Every structure is written in C-alpha cells, then in structure tokens.
Length: 209
Image (tube, rainbow, N blue to C red; front, side, top):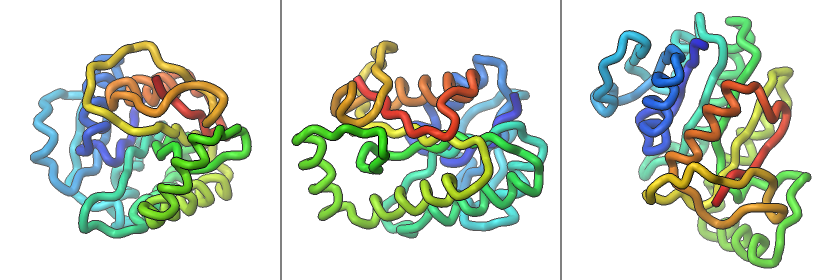
C-alpha cells in the first residue's frame, strides 16, 4: 500500500517506518525536520512541512491509499496539534478519495467498550489533573474521526517504554485485558498489523503487555 504517515519523526514513528518498508509498503512522510529521518529507501518519500498547514497535509495524502497518524504533543508545541492535524487529514482524505485512517492515542482516552478497574480510574483521574490538555486533545481528535464518514481506527496504548520488544502483546479495551505499559516497537507492530489487515474499523482497541 501507499501510506501517508504523520508523526513519523517521533519515537514511535521511527519504529513504524522500517517495519512498513520491510513489509513492502510505500511511505509518504510529512516531517517538520526531515533530517531526523536518516533513511534512504526508494519506497520512502519525505516531505518537509507542518501538520498544522492544510496544504502540506493535502500534498502528502494525495495519491495515498491509507493514512497513519502517530501525532503527539511535544514540549512547547500547540496543545491542539492532534485535533487540528486530524481535521486537516480528514478534509484532505475526502478530497483525495482516501477512506481509511489509523490514529494512535493514549489509554487515558475513554471509550464505551472500556471496563476500567479501580487502578484505571485512578490513572485517568491523575491524567485529568496533570495532563488535562493532552486528554482534551485526544478526546477532540477522536470526535473529529468519529464524526467523519471514514473507516477510522484509534489505537490506544498505555505508558510507552524504551524496552526490548516482546512481540507478544494483548489487545482489548481498558480494564478488559492487558497491562500498564508497552514498548514503542510493539505498538508500531500492532498499528502496522491493523493497517495491513484493515481490522478494528470504527473501533478503539487498547494494546499493551
């Protein structure tokens, strides 16, 4: 497939790119700092630009078959980057006739299929106090996707750790299965699997160890 990738220069993005290339996909990546992606592959196109710029987003999505968004807030960055960027993606996808998008978010984003346990509720309470902006952005971006007519999937993950991949992770919903952490590589692996299989459409699975 031809994948339009956003957030590819982030720590999960650099795990996703080599996996996608190895799987035989073509990647069109939008990056504010292309130099952070030191890859040389004929199947990889890196375009300098900003996800907050509607034209930059449209340029990368044009000609793609699916969109993968690994956007996250960065220190000093806008607090609504995920929401605004997702809005640009949805608009560009409709214009370009692209119908499928997979977006990454955190386990603090609530979903009606969740069955949060006490520890999950405590975690969400802490997130709501100390990371209110992050949660709001996650919720607002989810509302943009759920309000569209696209085949969307939001992959949620708990704390991302720089630990060796296990290659064996659990997929369900908050409180129904899984734990409180996962490696970035394993998240990237699952997102690629969802992209390949076209699974979990109109759904928000939670992946963890």
